[in-house]
Length: 118
Image (cartoon, rainbow, N blue to C red; front, side, top):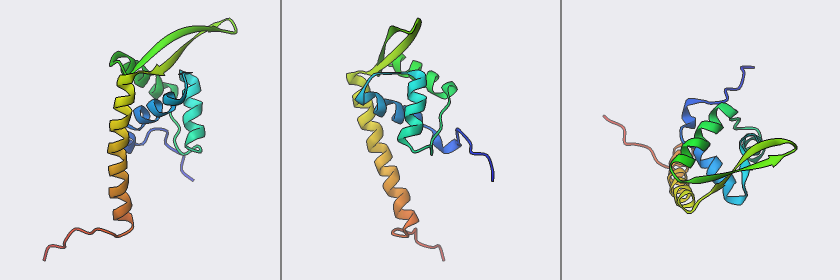
């Protein structure tokens, strides 16, 4: 059995979508998000910290997230929460992914075929 890739090419945009969606419910720190993504996707999507942290930083820079530092057990963790701009972005991403999902499902079900060139 081949090893499962943690970041296949079709995953563009998925980390941002999942992060925003999970942070909509509650604030989390980076590694907690890594674990929450695995749990929410039933281990089908595994994103490492090397993917999650750059997305968090980019979303914060764009104003979609805000962060706060919190001391926990002698360590400082950075917790992220989604902003109003982040909720708007999430809504747009959900719309895009819903259309994409419908298009793929339609193709897989044989509901729509392109006309064959004769």
